[in-house]
Structure formats: C-alpha cells, structure tokens
Image (cartoon, rainbow, N blue to C red; front, side, top):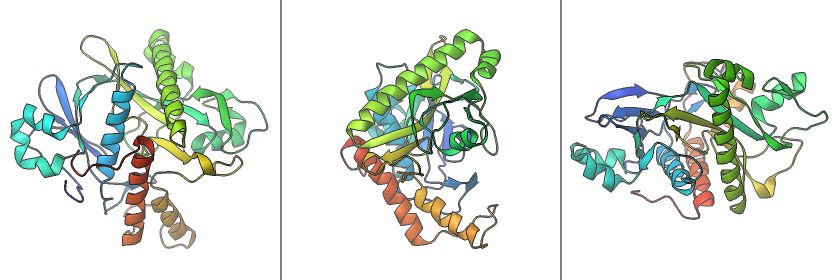
Length: 307
C-alpha cells in the first residue's frame, strides 16, 4: 500500500470524483470506488493528505457491509485487493495504488437524499434545537442539553448539495419528492442499520452519535445501501468511557485537524476560506492515528498493511 494517495489514476473510465473518492466504471454492472487520503474540513479540501485514511474508510465500510448484510441489501461486492485484481487484471500494475482502499460495488441509481439518523443531539441538530426547539423541523421535548441521547433516534433527511453543506429537510419534504412509500422504506432501513450498528459499536466502547446513509436502486428495483457506512467521515464516533452530556464530546475522526484550524481562525491567522493553511506534520500524524484507532476499536484488530 502506498503511504499516501492524493488521487488515483486507473486505466478505467472515471465516472466522477468527489472530495475523497474517485468512482470508476469497472464493467457494465459494477463500479470501483477508490478512497484517497484527501481530507476536508469546513468544506475545504486540504492540500496535504492523511496517511491510511482512505484504507480506514474503505475497510470500515466493508466491515459493516459484511456484518450487517442480513439487515439490508447493499451494493457491496468485495474490498479484497486480490479478488479485485483477479477480476480486473488490467489493474495489476496499480496494486500499490489500490490496495486496501478500493471497493467493488454493484451499480445503482442513487437516491437524491442523505438519510441521517441522529441518536444524540449534536452538531447542526444541536444548533437547530437551541434556536427553535426542533430537529429536522419537528419539535423535540424541552430542556435537552448538548449531546443528550435521543430515544428513540430521529430520522433527519438532507439534500445532497454539490458544494457547501447539505441542507436538513423534513421527512414530508422527502416524501413529497420520492413518494410516501419510498420515503418510509428509506426511513425504516436507516433505523434498522443504525440500530444494529449502534448496538454492535456499544460492545466495542464506541457511541455512534449520528450517521448518514446513502441508498440506491439497482436495475431490478432493489433498494440497496451504498457508498460508505458508519465511518468516522460519515458519523460521529464518541468514546463511551468519556461521554458526558451537556458538552461537546471527543471523537474518533479529524478532530485534531478541526481543532487546529479553529485555533488559527480564533487567532485571525486563517479566514476559513480557500486556500487552506499548510498542515504541520504533528496535525497530520495525530489525525491519521485517530482514524487508525477508530478502526482498531471497532473491529478489534489493526488495519492490515495490504487488505
């Protein structure tokens, strides 16, 4: 595995490039997702990459797809490098580039909404609650504090925006766009996957405070879980032994990076816009270790060098 990959360049048709991933057309029925080590914060992609971040995101998603396969159909086929190379020999010269960070998936047509499940009151949900006493436009009980557990969890869909933050919308907004039956299917599937994932993570000392899922519909009309699943980029992972309602929580993600950037903003050394500041080696190393620790805690073993 290469130490750092900022962008993959494979001999396959490139379908699209996101903040972190390149998506290639593998064949008529499959796509290849390659997670780079790019990192973004405050909707800005940093110039420097985070070693092994892409492999962590890919392998955590693969772990969940395999563990929760009975919960909901998914687009996952394999994240094993050897199997991918056997199916697509043209990639053999690129083994170091794709090892550990690449996933073969079935093609689907993505649903144009993010399916967010919130089990705790944090982030934008906490901001909305403080301002209006609501979450996703629906009223919540009064007197809740930051990071309070929400029981039952709340389904909070969001639009998918090409630039900037996704926009939280009400369930009725999603139902009007997709139809009530499809909206209910998405909500029920999201609750099911989150509940199973939350319960498993609790046995590993991790609180999954919230997460966002994406779904797609395949050629046969089957609704499938797609993209990444309950990773530190798509979720808030909190160490259970440090949980304390009434404040923000430490998390297993790019918190060291965000904290450093917030410090620069507070000191007037960065205006929060592109171009981003140059990341010092200690921030890069601390962020990498945070991702690796999330993988180790969740799965119980260290991330393999060549998954």
